[in-house]
Length: 291
Length: 320
Ligand SMILES: Cc1ncc(C[n+]2csc(CCOP(=O)(O)OP(=O)(O)O)c2C)c(N)n1
Ligand SMILES: [Mg+2]
Image (tube, rainbow over all chains, first blue to last red; front, side, top):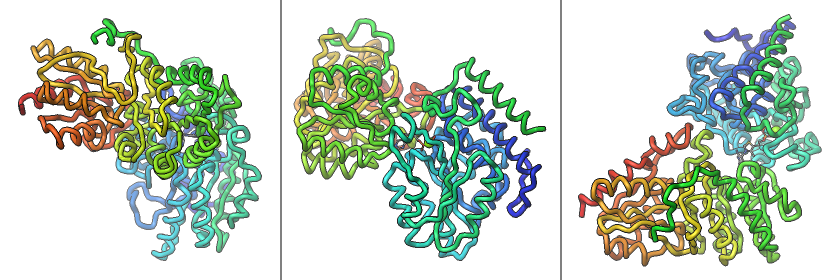
């Protein structure tokens, strides 16, 4: 049974915000179980994009799980493919495929590969994993939408380590040149990549100035605040003549105190004790949002 | 000859950890060695070098083309750069840098390709590296070296560092059995006969050497005496050894953790076809991407089991 959707255009009422915020924590629990069960997968980056993906799939995106290849669907490219356990969870709960598939994540013969694969998983547009592709592919999708005179919108979710890749900036130039206002990038700005903080591994500040200098409209938000995410997505729809980047300030490992901001939790699975502790914290957060 | 292989194999050891340890050792004897990584030094274990020699280590972020080009600049200054990232990224995203500057420009840069073959098993086909040998060996001036066990990683790394010119050093991620004794003394460009036999020859590389030895045992139990020859260097190829195997056994099977197109099987076929085209079978991935899953099960599912080798040996012999 797919979860309730608040269709695009629904007013951002407090009950809806609370409902989506609670779900983001329920999805974290699901992801925790997937990674724990097979002792493989990426928790930190999945937790940091929980609210972003939840807001998109359960409100903002115009997609149809019954017809995943519907011509005019909004496109979402999840470029930071390593964090796909959260994407799979949202897709399943949105009705793209059975929720039962989730616990087969990364197993032999699974529909859910270690990184997104279009052929095996409904709702996936392009493979991801090797970082850096989402922006330029998104630019191509935005050009296609323009050529086809379609109102569909294109969203690309990037990691902040991912933007070290040169091809990101090649794509940024292309999108600005062609004034792709139907392309919206969401940067999961959690300040941590695989081997440490972005400050240590590859500094990216001043981030907003960089994108502005490249010809983009920049919006900065708190990336775990569902209301801010939804407002920014609406705002992005009002910008004309420029591509938009939403710099979402997030926390890697968000929701589990000992995982937050620690690059160890980029790709390490929890042991039983850590699993129980994490589960407890996430369950408390779910309960908080229930009241 | 037989003393190259341990009578009972040692417990599986991590190949990437062996590599990290070897890199630290190399740092001691080779002050000109500098190490670069692209935000995966805790995966490829080049971070072990960073911990001991922080001033000779450079993390360039998630930027593989820059990783290789920065290494080129360091080589130009007389250093011996060892660049580290996943194998598939050297063979794909950074390939133009590799071709133009390492191979055409003949820069003395070493590429340590981590997580090759199916060894990044759970991350899946996006990260697995099954065409890298084909790509790298097609480049003029490139040398391609594939160690078979943790000891081989250690022994070959210093050879790689001392070799003049670019080298692609192809590494496995996982725990694999220790097969070699300390008598194993590999030299770049020279194959090694690990077990003698005249009925057919298994030519293998990398972590498939262990499975090839197991296959030879099974064949022996069926009265087939298989020779096992390890080619840790795919380029320059030890054609003398390959042709000797062909001449003396008249049937060959190649075994590699790679596509059957363009890798070890391709190299051997190219050699045989021009001089002595004996029947030959290739064990490897059948021109397909694999999937996510546990390493050993993936190898079995994608045509790299011990019985796949045994069956290929019988097919090759039947065609004599
Ligand atoms: C081109 C490429 N280089 C290296 C990697 C290995 N890798 C996977 S995730 C990651 C760090 C990503 O950091 P970030 O983009 O900040 O993601 P997040 O913090 O959201 O998890 C790295 C280096 C890769 N997948 N692709
Ligand atoms: Mg990050």
